[in-house]
Image (cartoon, rainbow, N blue to C red; front, side):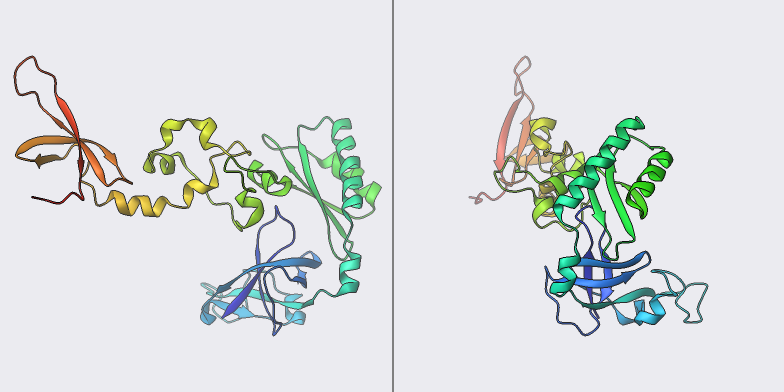
Length: 294
C-alpha cells in the first residue's frame, strides 16, 4: 500500500499518513490531524508498506488512537499494525494564507533569544514553528547537553498566550535549516534532497581510502563528516571484495610476496617482495588485477 511521507518543518522528523484518496505529489501542502492538533505539512516522499503491517483509521478514529499504539485488532500482546492516519485535504489558498509569515517567526525568535539570555541558558535558537491551528509554538534549538528551560517556557507561554514546546535538534539539522554551499560548490545535500540524516562514520572514509585527507577536508559546514561519504560506500565495499586481503601471500610473475595495500578504484594492490640478497631492501610493486595474463 502506498503511504505518503509528510514533514512539518525542516528539522522535524518525517511522519507517515494515508493519502486517503487524494492525488498527491512531492511538494504538495496538505492538512492533517496529529496527536497535538491540526497541522499543515509538505509531502516529501512516498513508501510502499505491506497491508498486513498497517491499519488505516478514519479521522474520527484517529482522535482516540496514537501512532504505533494498540490498534484494537485483538492481538494486544504482539500487535503487528502501525496506526496510519489520513490526510484530511490538500491545502487551499485560504489554508496557505493562515500560515505564519517569516516576519512573525523572526519576531518570535528574537523575543525567545532575549529570554534565553535573560535566563542565562546555554542554548542556540535555530527556528520557530507555529502550528496550523494556532494552539502551539515550537522553538528548535541546539545545545551541548540538557538544558533546564522550565522558567523560559513559563515566560514564553505568558507572552505568546499559547502552548510552548522547546525541541532540541542536532547541529546537522541546523545546517539543513540555515542552508549553505558545500566544498563541491553545490547547495548542501541535507537542505536540497536528503529526507533523513543517516549516520556517517569514520569507517566510511577509511573504506573509501580518503581518511588521510584529514577532518577539515572531510567535514561539512556543520562540522560533522560529509553526508556524501555514505553515497558510494556500498560500491567501494563490493569492489574491495574483489581484492585479496591485506597480508595475503600471492604469486606475481613467479615471485611470492605479501599484499600490503589496496587501490580499490584502480582495482590493484601493492605487493611487497622480500630482498633477494641479504642487506638489500624489500621491493614493493603495484599489481593491476585486471591486467591480461600472457
